[in-house]
Amino acid sequence: MEVKTYTQTLEFLRSYIEPVASTAEKTISEALGFVLAEDLHSPIDLPLFNNSAMDGWAFGSEDIKPEGFTLKEVGSSFAGHPYPKKLQSGECVRIMTGGEVPEGADTVVKQEIVKADDKEITFPSEVRADDNVRRKGEEIRSGDVCMTKGTLLHAPEINFLAALGIHKVTVFKKVKVGFFSTGDELQSIDQPLAPGKIYDSNRYCIGAMLREKGFDIIDYGVIKDNPETLKECLLRASQECDAVITSGGVSVGEADFTRKVVLEIGELISWHCLIKPGKPLAVGKIGKAYFFGLPGNPTAAQVTFYAIVSIALALLSGQKDPKLVYALAAAKGKFKKNVGYTDFQRGLLTMEDCRVTVTPAGSQKTGALKSMIKANCFIYLADNQAAPADGELIPVVPFWGAC
Image 1 (spheres, rainbow, N blue to C red):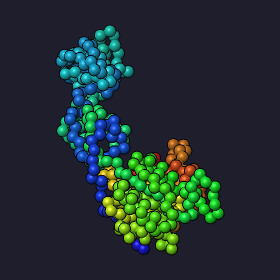
Image 2 (image 1 turned 90 degrees about the vertical axis):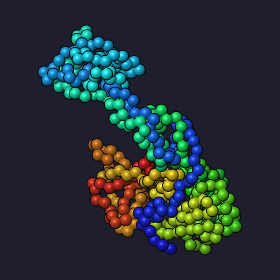
Image 3 (image 1 turned 180 degrees about the vertical axis):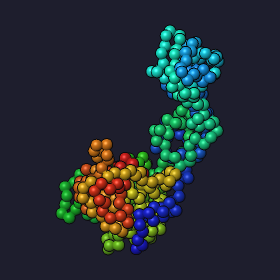
């Protein structure tokens, strides 16, 4: 079995995964969580007109005097109610945030530093030309590409599209993912445990992780260690889904049938990925569907999903250059790390005196489940890194920042 580093694994996935081709038109109210399937061009300038960045008075910069100056207020420009005339020298208008800067004006002074005596407005000496004006088209010009193909649409993207007056977009259809667990030892969680049995937790966890990512899912339940039953389920899932995820059964043990069956009905590329926890990983295709075999250990399955499979599914969804989101935090406490493996240790991010620190969140053993509950991040320790020293800045992946 081939051995790959974490970086090599991601490089392979980027070359192996082909995005889904099916697209659909969605209103922006429906498009949250979808991936844009085409470049978008702005239909308007943004801002659409010169407008004020704050409440104050607007005037032409030719009236500015180093020692200060006084102008006559001749009207107002509020949001949605612009001043209709061209300003002349010596004139100013009361303006509010978002109000259109009238013709003849190019500068706004905030109200806190101005003295108003009825319609006589006195400005201080520190006024600078062009202050506090948001210029027409300074953010984007009409006709320019405003959003590129492969963009995952979150709330800020929806806000931006709405501000441009874009009502509908073409997106890639949601990836449909089927999943199931394998193993004669697995038992339903609503039944008392029989001797030698364990509860099937992975299937619930995989389903929850997929829902968090917004995928359409099909839960195929628990499949016993029977090659024919397993083959039937895999063939059905590959016809109904874009991707299939299993947990367990991808090693080379006598009862690990998943690997053998996938090789029989499709293609399988299996290797040891040098990450902890994790290591056994299988990727392949059955018909049109991609196959991902996760380790059977619950914690290893979670780590492998977030670190690898979530990125593969993002690529399949058409997302442009998906990756984990890293931040830096100061190491605190005792760490263990062997060079040669990329560790995704469970960590706890905290803020102490305006300094972000991270500590191990309990046991880092592969079988430890409680530390995943306590943790709020993965501590990312690259394959060539030893255990970090106290205070050393190290990368972390907040759970809300996983791809």
